[in-house]
Length: 166
Image 1: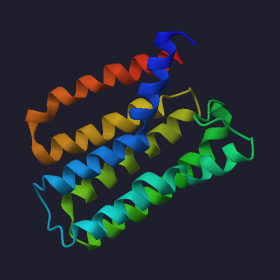
Image 2 (image 1 turned 120 degrees about the horizontal axis):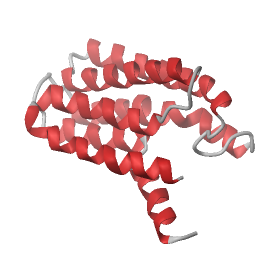
Image 3 (image 1 turned 45 degrees about the vertical axis):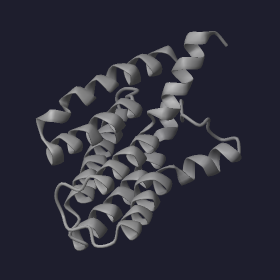
Image 4 (image 1 turned 90 degrees about the vertical axis):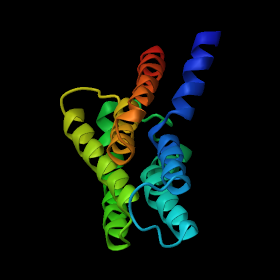
């Protein structure tokens, strides 16, 4: 594997939708801007379960069985995994709405919307869930913190390059 492929692989892991959710969760919990975070530990655990673990649990299961690769490269196999992710994101949306945690609610809505759009798009083209899974949360970040975070969208160029490379 050449150096650029190694870098693309590294970036694909570091900037995957699941990893990115983890980063944004920490930003929202460490630098609260909106919402009434009742218990940061509980919020962290709920966020990790429904925004990081739940969406990829079935992928890990079927990868272990040898049915899919970690990226679910076969477009025709993606829909059930997207649906499982959507279920997790909807559950997170409901939980954070009920807990009155605005930032995490916005993040959950962003992931739900992006994943629904990617699922629909997947029927006609092979869409980059990595790119969408970073763009949605960056939009939530902008919604919560304002235009000062717009430069963070430059990360998308790394995601685009890494996914095209692989």
